Image 1 (cartoon, rainbow, N blue to C red):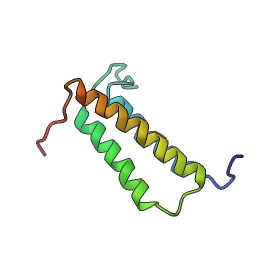
Image 2: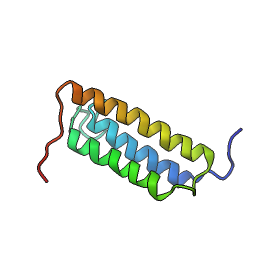
Image 3: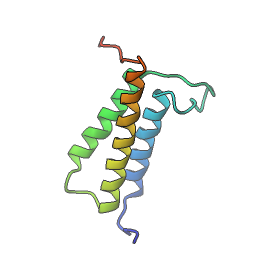
Image 4: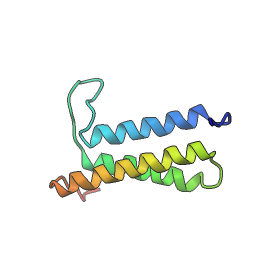
Length: 94
């Protein structure tokens, strides 16, 4: 059953941040250049922003929104770890 109170702007934000993470993980092409541009540091930043958003919205999300955030984060984290295992560690410089 679909929750009628789902905030489309919130869903759009989650999708935007996850698309950025997927792009930086090298799983999606840059829509402007058409090239795969991997940046593990930027991928981690996008994942961290999603994690922060999850923490800040705890208790304020519908079940569907919470599932979307949880599933998105789980998928991104698994792929991030897989990329790190293949030797693509993020830069430690700030």
